[in-house]
Each structure stands twice: as structure tokens, then as C-alpha cells.
Image (cartoon, rainbow over all chains, first blue to last red):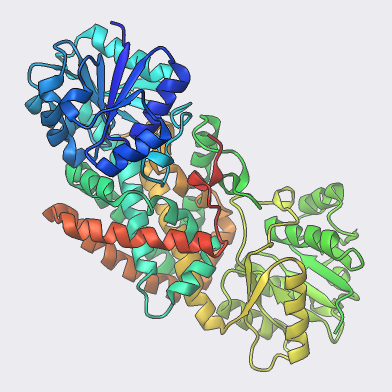
Length: 300
Length: 300
């Protein structure tokens, strides 16, 4: 299967980065874009993100070999219904959502006669909107593809090849396992970051101004992901509720253990724990998944 | 009061950065260094961090106008006892510890006849040891000075001027308030980061290899501060136990509220919360306390 025409529905950080990356790395591929927001469509036109920006979702997918839905996971069903009348019979429909079981169900229900292959590029920044994207966002990052059992092999291979052409590394995974893995590596961290930033901003004893001034002691690291798109993240937690709550339970157990160690003055337990966690970062850097420079490479 | 000779005791990340910054910004000031570890002293000599590296703590402080103890907060009393025989009568003794009430008590007890002015530069990276330091670490960061009521004004002014000369901004604060502010902005974030990195590495359902591969979804942000020095942080939690446990209690309350919102599917509560936390990061960037580039300025 050859992908000669891609349509991206939803032109925020991820969708606009896909459009830019296709234009940068696959200049012969036609890129059509659509967004439900007239304002975003206008920004996308001004930024020249795509060959064409279509005002209508069904018109946007006409002739597309691959359609990627890059909308919040709570809007996948609506987006799929909107494109359905315009799809080619053999088009591949994929997405970029951060939860996969619920999206797979929603897309299968909305598009029962089409080839649907959910996917999730594990990449992003804290910024949102069409201006925030960039062509190199996916380079060296993993894209997890979660084909159902009925997905045609050549379509899976075409989607895999597409993401590799954008610079990503591809893993195939069961949707349920994806949701557990991402609950740990992405959803729980976001939930914790959102929580602590909220906690810090509402203490009586410490002013918000003090929290901001002295944030270089560690707090600022949490504020980056707590600045991510609120609607996207609201939807992720609701769509992946069970896996998020299961990992949160484990986190709470561990936090209680450390809380007790502090209360009891158990120095050995604390030092052992803190020594163990140190090794993980080295592995992440060795795997090329973070910047080896101190402080994430922040300027000093 | 003129500070013509500084001795730094403890030549890890912070101590070695002070030595470098003094040499870079105050070339006429003599810098003597000492570390309890022979290996660290040798590294410091190889790196030419100081004018002199003394093998003996009391000898190191001979003639010093300002002595800065840059050791883990649990070792402050031992360090103060070790330097006591060598101190000039009018020397100022300060430190860089992350908790201030317990350090103030320990230093006052060990050095009852000297001018002790605790301080805490809110700066650092996840790296440790004499090779990890750099001269610009304190530029634009806050240094919190917590003088007791009996501290002579000219000595406070001299210490304040010293930190300003290193590029820091100085705030004066009560030690107990410092401990509450830092519990929120630094100690709780470290505790949470240590917890979640430990949790993620011990799940049965998700392998450590998967956690590492897909860490760009958010988890990697927590691994930086969870790679900080284990002994330093063990001591911080024990020294600032009450404030840490108090803020942890507040965090746990907020986390329970969000957990319940997810379980109940309360979309509005989640979106409201996530929208509110977004603003804090903008303020931190506006205050110059973090890099405005996406992803902390990581290379893409």
C-alpha cells in the first residue's frame, strides 16, 4: 500500500507537527488538514501547514489514503462520524490519542466498514495549538501502534512505515497493555503534577508568589506537564480511568511507605529508595529518551 | 566587614560551584577548600577549584572571614565541631543546607561564641560531586538568608553582599518560614518524584524497560530530581520532617479529590483544575525562574 495523500483532522500540537513533518520528510505526499475550529483553520492557513485546509471534515478526507485523527480522545467518536461520508473505501483511519482501548472501541463503532488502526506517538511538549508544533517532534520518539486482530497486515505495515518516515520508532502492542504502560509513564505523572501544582498554589502558609520565586528547588519541574492542554488531559483521565486508578493505588501505597519512613526517622529506608531511583534516569538517557545535559539542558 | 578569604567545607555540587563562582567573579578573594573525603579533595585539587585544599578542617578555616558549610544537613554538627578550633573570632559561619531550623540549632550549639548566619541558595542540578559544579549556578537564583535575632547587621550585610556578588538575589526570612516554603517548593516535589520513580520501576504489569522507552510521555520529567544525591535528600526529609509531613498531608487531600473526580467521571472538576495549574508555569517563566523554551529547552 502506498500512502500518497494524508489528511490530518485536528491541527493542534500533534496534528500540526504531523503535517509539518510530512511536508519536511515526504515532500511528494499530499497533506490535507481540517480542524473543527474556524480560528484554528485560519491559523493553519496562515502557517501554510498543509497543501489544503478544508472547512468540512468529510471533504477533507476525500481521496486520502491515510486519515489521522488528532483530536482529544473524548472527541474521537464525533470526528469519526464527521469524516465517515467522505472516506475512500480502502482508506486507513488512525489517530494519536493517549488512550487506546476506548478510542479503538469508539472508532470501530463509528467506522465499522473501514480499516481502523489506532496509534499513539509518545511525544509532545507543554504547548498547545497549531503554532506550537514542529517537524522534528517525533524524531527518536516511540510511536505505539495497537492494531486489532482483524487489521490487514499491509495496512499495519503502511502505517508503521509512515511513522518511521516521520523519524519515529514503532512498537506494536495490545491496546489494553498500552493503556497500562501509558498510565504509568504518562497519565499518572500528569495527574501527580497537576495535583502538586494545585496544592502549592492554595496553601495558606506559603504565598503563590513564594512558590514561584523559589520554584527552582524542584517544583518548577512539575509545572511543565501541569501546563499541558486541560481538555486533552481531562479526556485522557476519563478514557483511561481504570488503568489510571490502578496505578494511582500503587503510587499511594509507596507514598505511604515513604511517609512512614520520614515520620519514624528511618534513614536507611530513605537512602536505599533514593539510591535505587537514581539508576532509572541513567537508563532513560542511555536509551536516548532524555537530554543528558544537567537540568534538562536548561540555560544557566 | 570585608570578605577577603572564604573557606568552603564540602566540595560537592554546591560547594564546588561556590568556589568556582568566587574565583570567576571575585578574583581578589582567597578561596580555601576542604572535604572530609580524601578522594574529593584530590578531585578538587585536580580541578583547581580553590587556591588551597586543606586536608584538615580546622586548618582550612584558619584566617577565613567567611566559612560556608556545604555538607548534607545531617553532617552540619560534625562539620561545625571540626572547624571550631581553627576559626577566627570574628569569622562568619554560614551554610547552604536545604532546611534551616535544624541547621540553625545544630550550628548555634556547636559554635556558641561565633556569628552563625544560615543560608540556602535555591539552585542545583541532579548531578553530584566536585566535577558537577559550575560558576554560573547561582546567577538569577534566590538565596534565602535566615539570620537569628542576635545576628550582627554588618555580618548579615556582608553575607548578603557575598551572595549577590555570586549573581544571586537574596531574601531574608525566618528559618521556620523558610522550612515551610521549601517543603512546598522543593522537598515535597522531591518526595513525590522519588515515590513515582520507585513505583514505576516495580510494577508487575509494566516492565522497567517499557517505563524507560516510553518515558517521554511525562515520566522522564520526574526522573531528574529523583536522580539527586540520596544522602543529601535523606537528611533533608529527616531534618525538615514536620513541614514535609504537613505539606504531604495537603497533597494527599488534593490527590484524593482528583482521584474521586476521575472515578466519578467529573469532567468539569478536572478541566477546571487543569486550567488553573496552567497559569503557574507562565508566572515562573515571567519571573525568570525557568526556561521559556518548550520541554525545558531540551534538544529536539
